[in-house]
Amino acid sequence: MTEAIVVALITVAGSIIVQLLISKNNAKKQEIADAVRQQRIDDQLDVIRTRLDEHNGYARMFSDMTDSIQNMALTVTELKKDIEYIRKDR
Image (cartoon, rainbow, N blue to C red; front, top):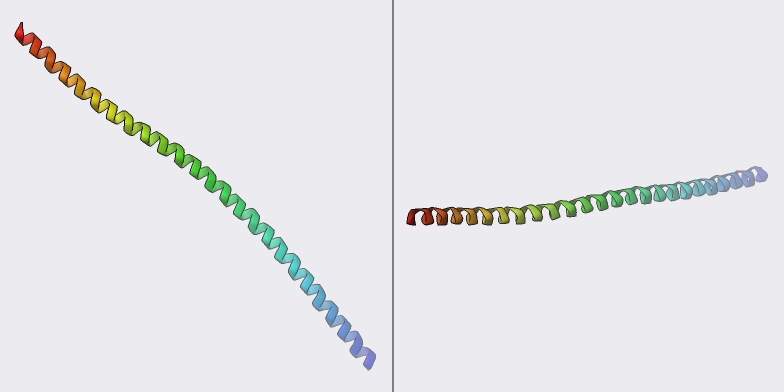
């Protein structure tokens, strides 16, 4: 009977050790999967940031072009007035 108890204890200890090893291995696999997932997210965010920076650059350029077009329109209006004034004087 004593031998049966020793065998049972050895079996239980072996089972516990195997379960701990399996658990540790699964935790390591999950950690690696989480790291890969996080790296993919970081890569996607970098792409989004790059595209946003490009977009903001274009938005600034369009804003500057709009200001330039408005200034040109004012200049053309003034030139038209000057031409009409010169024509009236003749």
